[in-house]
Image 1 (cartoon, rainbow, N blue to C red):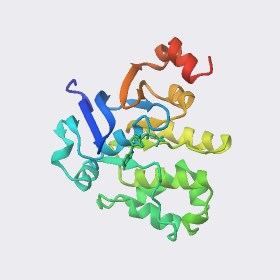
Image 2 (tube, rainbow, N blue to C red):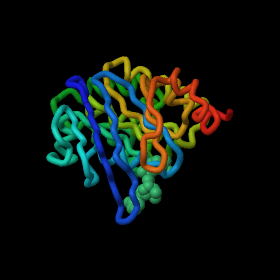
Image 3 (cartoon, protein in one colour):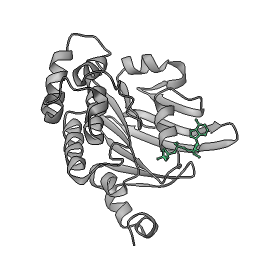
Image 4 (cartoon, helix red, strand yellow):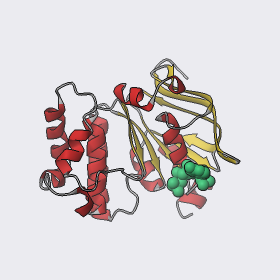
Amino acid sequence: GSSADLLSVSDCSVSYGKVNALRDVDLRVGEGEFVALIGPNGAGKSTMANTVSGFLPYEGSVTYEGREVRDRTPRALVQDGLIHCTEKRDLFGFMSVEDNLRLGAYRQDGSADDRLAFVYDLFPALEERTDQEANTMSGGEQQMLAIGRALMGDPNLLVLDEPTLGLAPVILQDISDGIDRIREEGVTILLCEQNVTFALNHADRIYLLENGEVVREGAPEELRGDDYIRQSYLGG
Ligand code: ATP
């Protein structure tokens, strides 16, 4: 990748035993860019997210800020601003909204109160529920909380895995507006997303993953004009 790449993946392969989940993947995310990785169930999107975050062994190269991910622990990557909001959300169900958020302030640099104010401004529904237990919230509210907690870590690269999964249209709009604002704050985003329309409407560049391989890559306007994408992912 070029020197401005925040994340650079080349020739990357990941296997779970005999299952090859990623095969020779090349992908780059420039500083300040919003990149989406789309693809059907089982294509390998979550595997890519987990690999980038340092959770999986891989062949090939994955660099964040120019240094190989396998040479650092996931914890060190978080300290360096690579924050991953997982598909499962991984909230602490019996803890309050605010406690969940404060747990995301990994860097402990004294700026947690400012970031909390930003998160509440971004998602007012969370501020109305500061003392509510996370597991009593709706799916959409839990998704806001998961994204909010990731923001508490002051990300430089935010990896978002399926933030729209199962959300009603009204909530989807709130999440969508929130993601746009996060982007405006200068956070680089790698979005793993099954909702192709959502990805096309938000990202600067898109990679389509099928069976662990990148089969298309381009700007949203290019992919919208691609016959295969139109027929297979946009309903013809
Ligand atoms: P989804 O949107 O359904 O989560 P995905 O694109 O994120 O799909 P992955 O979860 O990365 O896809 O899965 C890619 C492939 O790897 C699938 O065939 C899946 O069954 C397999 N896989 C994922 N995690 C494991 C695991 N821990 N052990 C074995 N196989 C796995």
